[in-house]
Image: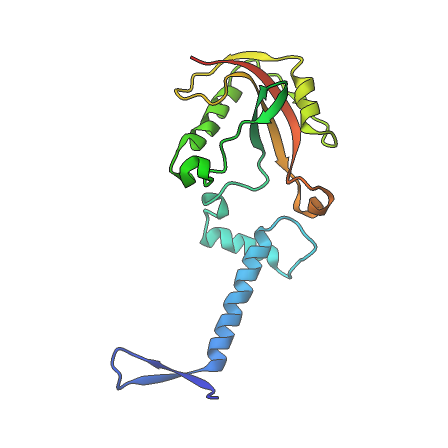
Length: 197
């Protein structure tokens, strides 16, 4: 096995041998840089690299947008819609966008539902009921149903009409993922009587 690679240029007559040790060193160097940057932006964990705080400050200078530019934080709460049908609470979420019912993402109704929920949540007079994270969500929704608020849904294509609810769900922290079968736990809920046009 050769100790160097032959890299050809546009002119076949000229070849430059590049030692494998250079390629290995360059690959190892970039791998260490990538690991330092990744570790410095991960939530606090048991791994601590020497000088990792310095890596974070350098990375934010070189790439100031960070990952938040590309994606939403995984620790942000999600708002799950529910409808009261046939004497029980049923999920009313149109997501995931990629499911067959949404024509694999081509039907945009699932995207507009989040905007509809946000508009309803910003109405005045919303009353939240705290949820016991060890109890089922149905218990929290039943308790919240004691004080429903009447709202008018101004969405042109409403998905929540009549008796509806929204539960604020927080993701189970990564460190505790093995303690719960659920990926999210309810923190609070609100119940509405939604009037649609």
